[in-house]
Length: 578
Image 1 (cartoon, rainbow, N blue to C red):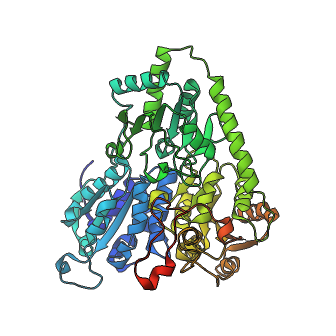
Image 2 (cartoon, helix red, strand yellow; image 1 turned 90 degrees about the vertical axis):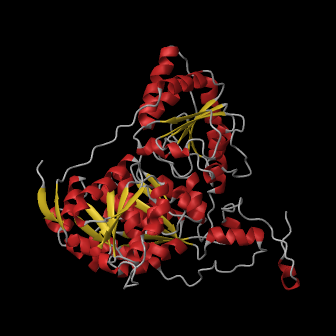
């Protein structure tokens, strides 16, 4: 390919085109106006949102569904800084997002001009790569680098551009960066893993996000079936292995499956496949200290930095989950082609699931009005289509959903993960729906998180004709934080009550969306069917029971403790340990 003379803004847009970018999410600003002017002719749709955080989440959601790098762009200064939380969520999700952040013009840097701030430090801990364009004629080169690292290291990158550099001259080529083919890992480690697993008394596979992102579900199934190894999902990756598989047990972690926790506790060898073994996702739950202390851990991940980071591992293998599972199965079959299924383990999994389902059913059958959150989640999980994509926010009812959401395919569960920022779900759903237009997409948010982002972004969905279905749990409280005040502060409620909530369904209608208000369990299926059939953005507002009797366990039991007050004026506020 020969080099071409072009404006730097043209070089950036053409690089996006070469990388297959069809949408760019952002909020209009003067800093990138010259780039914006080129989008229609380039075949790029500019999806403009109400707040930049939603743009970052939407790019993240689209990247998670498609597996390809996606782009968000913002005005310099306040606009760019509004990306920080969304880009951090993408970082912990290993999501390839390229954040384009124009900045103050090169002649004004350091003078304290309008909307000037050094934008790079804000993104330094939560990106795989960041670069400040230092010459206009390097635009295509550095943009290519951002896309390549985003997809090769699976995480967000930042392209920071002095705003006057869009108008510089570039003499360069435009081409697509190569795909990085990751291998199955070193032969010696594969052999060692095969020996450990073949000789294990009770092997368990922990299927992480890498199974879903790496399209490794079929390989994981075959490996589990050959070993008769029960499979647990890692925290908030409920789509990494199907619960209805005879060896599937559901997710570990906060508000997850007791069947999964009791199962992994029995393991003598754990294969953590595509999993970083996040510390919060392996904490004791339901008073079950389930992590198998004496088990040998084989951890497989494409990110070398997470190997052995939070747990001691017998083998830390840098490999692609799909390629590793394929090669490991070949090695195991070469050792013993006639290995028989372990019927005892299959029956063990069946019993654990039956016990858990019985317990879950007992806690999810309330006929109270307002509806118990667990009753709604039971009805919701049964009502949604099998191919639905669900994005989940942070909070009390969203956390409870971890026990109810069950998927048969990959890239169906998008969550805020360990960043845990309120406001994630709706923005991510916008991107997910664009990436999977033929699938229904639901965004689950509590009324608190809904007020942060979802409410205003309904206008985006209407304007851009993105038929996302929001499910808003209106229990008139910040439930997760209220639970802390119940358990540790003698029910002294401060900052947790949302007693003046408006009618969210009516507000949705006022903004041009469909709106449904659900009071009873019998109305859940009908509202979901109607929202899907409408083909429009919709808000299903669920009037839900609140208060201490329906709240989940404390979200941060590891971070709170009863406080002994020493100053006399606070002595009466002391809470004694149970």
